[in-house]
Image (cartoon, rainbow, N blue to C red):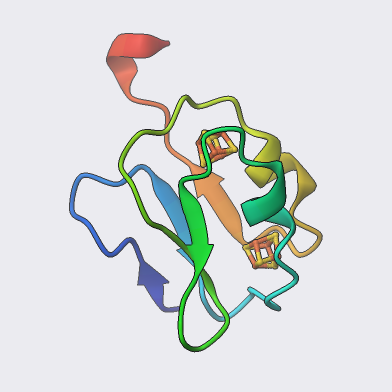
Length: 73
Ligand code: SF4
Ligand code: SF4
């Protein structure tokens, strides 16, 4: 499994092996922090996640995992 976060502080983890490049997570993120990379895989572009979770819920192949920091739970 190839887990890529691009930034060490990122809490949105995209499983690149599962991602089918559907772009749904990019569209549902209210913060606009997700984007598609050159291989058409989603990644976290800005580290401003609100942990609202539609990206994780709406991903059709379950490729996104949002790790909510202990302090904001
Ligand atoms: S949890 Fe919310 S803010 Fe964070 S990446 Fe997903 S949709 Fe965007
Ligand atoms: S919703 Fe899931 S499959 Fe679609 S681009 Fe985002 S991570 Fe990839």
